[in-house]
Image (tube, rainbow, N blue to C red; front, top):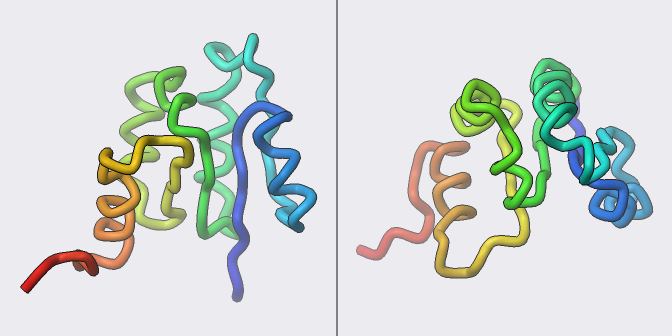
Length: 107
């Protein structure tokens, strides 16, 4: 069974992914993120058809502690955040957590 990509965020953030063919998404308007983002994230994490969850890195600040721990500890689906600075090392850590090895490690 192949798994899908899901996108969570504001309608402006999800629209580009939807135009590219991503079928699973949760639109959470900016003004509702503090109230609705946790539920959208938990619904997506519980969806067995989802293998990758994409969010904007700034949206992580709107998550409750329990929701943040759930996404940060999730191996399947794996969370990928976009929008962070190149020096943050976030993508490297996400890949390492997802596959169990550091592909960028120097010998």
